[in-house]
Length: 65
Image (cartoon, rainbow, N blue to C red; front, side, top):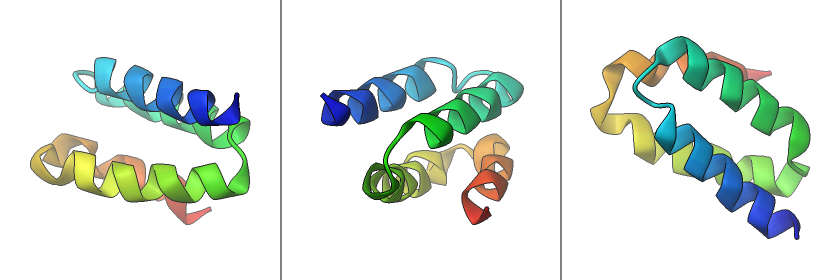
């Protein structure tokens, strides 16, 4: 079930990537919900996902916590 939460979080983040503030809000929710190993997977995915979306680079701040 927890693997599906990771996939669900990725899906939500993809869908809201048009809005930086909403993306950051959903990212914060995902980081609070996921298990530590899932957070690590999400970090790897996020870094590759935002490579062509410079407006979302500010969301990396939440990963440093």
